[in-house]
Amino acid sequence: MSKIRTAIAVGVALVIGVGFTIGVVAQDKAAAVKERQDTMKQQAGDLKYIADFAKGVSGDQATAVQKAEDLHSLSAKLPTLFPAGTSNADLPDVKTYAKPNIWTDQDNFKASIAKLPELEQGLVDAVKAGEKPKILAAIGNLGKNGCGACHSTYRAKMPQQ
Image 1 (cartoon, rainbow, N blue to C red):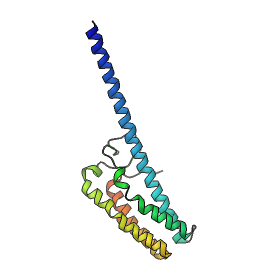
Image 2 (image 1 turned 90 degrees about the vertical axis):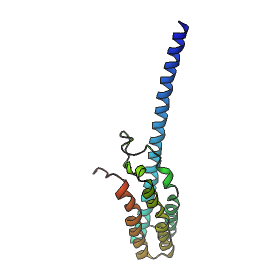
Image 3 (image 1 turned 120 degrees about the vertical axis):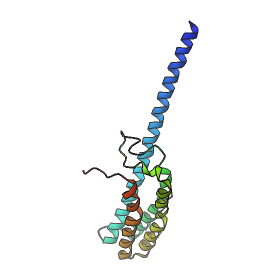
Image 4 (image 1 turned 90 degrees about the horizontal axis):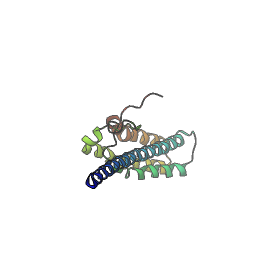
């Protein structure tokens, strides 16, 4: 009888342990998605500030330089923000637009990210020089050949608000 109770206790412990592990892994993946989205929102905010400065809408050059440098420094973090298992197919209950082809096409995905530092450096240089037409051109180049190139291939369309 005690062997049966021991076996049942071990079985229950295993089920609880597996369930806990799955819950922790799901939380870790959801946290990774949140960190990725928070970083992208920060990048978008930095770009908006810089664009508003360049268009003469608002802002000052010193803050625009800081935002451009922040944007540039964030590109080094991007490869770490896409752990396996965090695509929209992997996490249907989590709001993520990362397509599974990020992980099946890793070489091209990483090559896309690798272009960002050079494009962002061009933006930093333009902002430091205070040349607003060059700033706008650098933003366009970054949008088309950096952010947009990656998003068009590896990001699912967001639903219309």
